[in-house]
Image 1: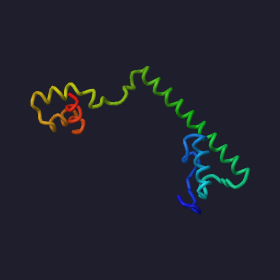
Image 2 (image 1 turned 135 degrees about the horizontal axis):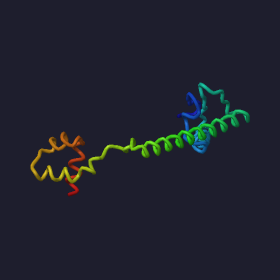
Image 3 (image 1 turned 180 degrees about the vertical axis):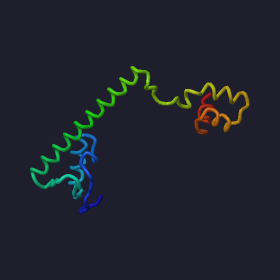
Image 4 (image 1 turned 120 degrees about the horizontal axis):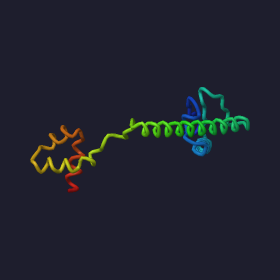
Length: 130
């Protein structure tokens, strides 16, 4: 952004992931002569009260993110206990032995891709490593 422009965000928590990030972004914007405006929050960083309000919003946004992460980890742990959480689908690397076998058996690369549901680049990369 250039001097004299204004960065507009809906809320401060959409701008930064942590209080430290927010402070760094605000500092960088000010040093470049760029104003910051949040459409849903009345923030005036030119006054002491506005700066304090901005910091408080940053603290609450970081706290909210931490709480959300804790809840997510609790949910994953419960799902794992129930056997519901399987993790992500195996990658092409997990299928590398099967790729090598099919290639040695004379299967065309596209057939390997279609049967194993992986990308063509993965097939070439895995075969190159063998």
